[in-house]
Image 1 (tube, rainbow, N blue to C red):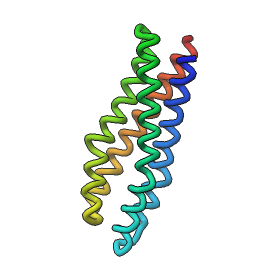
Image 2 (cartoon, helix red, strand yellow; image 1 turned 45 degrees about the horizontal axis):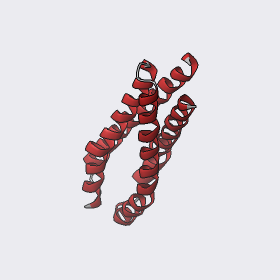
Image 3 (cartoon, rainbow, N blue to C red; image 1 turned 120 degrees about the vertical axis):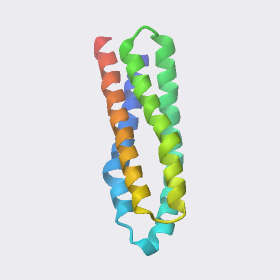
Image 4 (cartoon, rainbow, N blue to C red; image 1 turned 180 degrees about the horizontal axis):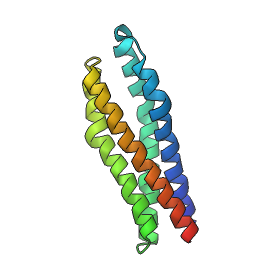
Length: 137
């Protein structure tokens, strides 16, 4: 049951992150400059609760899995990759979004897109590792 929860949480996170990377940020990038402040504020308001739910779920299932299976390298890999995504969000993406609240800045938005790819990669690694844990049983 623990491994199924880990896989579910990691897949939820990957799906969320892929949606942000492939749909949300490209759409935000096409917003005209004169509409930026309103669009970015709306994005931030709408996505914050989803981010909280996804990251809390991943943290919870990752913690449960590591406690339940402390010797499982796949579990540690999934948890570690999820932690990388979470720390990248807190340390890089959130501050970049705060800067973008002040107005559109091409360099800052480009940096956000780069950071976002790191988060997507980490979420993908976590999902693959969680699948590895399930398959290794």
